[in-house]
Amino acid sequence: MRFFTLLFTFFVLNLYGQDIASFNAIYTKTFLETSQKDPDKALKIADSLYTISETPVLQTKSLMLTATLYHQLADFEKALQYASKAEKIIQNTDNVLWKAKVYGFMATHYRFIRLFDQSKKYFEMGLNISTEIPNPELANNTMAMMMQEKAYYNIEKKDYHNSIKSIEKSEEYVLKTSVNADHLKITNQQLLGYCYYHLGNFKVAFRHYREALKLSKNFPENYSVGLIHNGLALLYLQENDLKKAKEHLDITLRITEESKNPSLKNEVYETSEKYYALTKNLEDYVKTREKHDTVKKTLQKNMQYLVNKSYSRIDQENTEIKSSSDTKNLIIGTALIIFLIGIVLFLGFRKKQKKNIQNFEKVIRELNEKKLLNSAIENTKEIAETPKTAPNSLMPIETEQKILALLQQFEGKELYLDNNVSLSSLATYCETNGKYLSYVINTYKNNDFNNYINVLRINYIVDKLRNYPIYRKYKIATLAEEAGFSSLNKFSTVFKKTISLTPSLFIKYLNEENSENTIEGILKLQNFKE
Picture 1 (tube, one colour):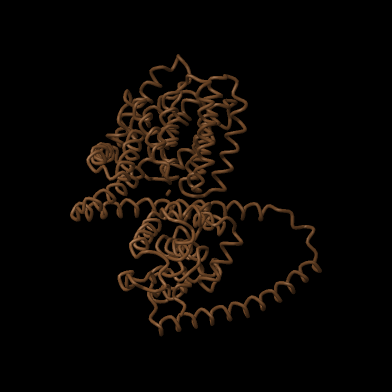
Picture 2 (picture 1 turned 135 degrees about the vertical axis):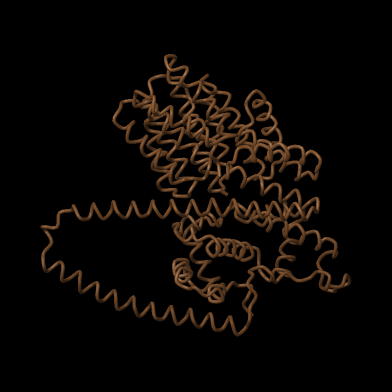
């Protein structure tokens, strides 16, 4: 999940010239230090910088600082307002450097709220204009940041291998510039640690996080430092070294509370929950869970609000384009044909819609009568019920228990969302072979490997659609990628086979139905079938 605001630092941090050294000194201190401890004061300073700015470039820089601060506070609407204002100002200049910075910011911003088409559009604009920057130092610096943005984009898609390639490309550009190089190196090392952690290569992840920590020693404790300590805490939790995990967790919690950054809190509270769960500290676990839920709701609410506004703006632009289009060439015959075709299609649609509704009601009725459980993977049998001397057992009961425990861990970490997962890779993860793994899945999950993974993925995306309405606004292709499917067609086929409805119809009924029982009723997953 999706969460990285650090890149904003680099899109708005570079010096413009020695004649504005004082401006830049205040600017940099405001972002790196003041914003972390007193964001309200930082916003006032940013506003003052804008007031004294006499050139379009300085105005743009001040506005982008304000936009970044609002983004850190999860006020995504205001962040976009200030960034859009900066975009309008810089468009009327020939300053390609700051155009690239603004485009990079917009790409990051839209990626963060998961409007990937808009993000990709601005990324390509920023990438193209970066090639026009005349100063090689600044050009390489900007290209390094663009490659970091590409890495973040791939991380959102859970494509960690390509993300690593983008980071390595960014590092090549960093070696060619001295502008802001230390910040770029810190971010690259932190990102590499993050990617290798999620790929399960913890040894390499440790190396990169430690290098990032070493590079950041002379910098203030800010968002990036918090992410580094959070990553190290996760790694030590993985090794069950609770003492060292606590040391890094305490540091990142202190930074988090001081920064008031909801995105950082979202990351750190999740790590804290894992720590308190491992230490069986129920009281602190509950407290942290409550704080985490509050932060997640704030982020989701603000993201959804901005998504709604973005779609409204797009609809308005489309309406204006339509109203200004030339309609003189439309003839009565064409209009009549279109009308007749529309009638035929409408009648066909109504017939199909009626059938879908009847089928939907039938599914609800049948599921209610059977009182099916609202879970896609609760059919795991209690292994304790199987006697150790079971004649059909393929392996010792202890081996089955170990595989089931690792499968539970695999499900809990949502590793099935990786579209590269295979029987062999899962067998390696479960420290067994394919034959034993297949036997356990068939016996205790009542599925073969492919259907087992597919049910987990569909259950994951169904949960997101039910509990986070913002997901209902995403494209089906985005949902498919989020769930780990390699193609839209495969996702749609598996979804319909599992739920008995297409993804679009499922979303439609979710939006229309107010009854919680009715919504839960359409979760007709394979594991429910008798």
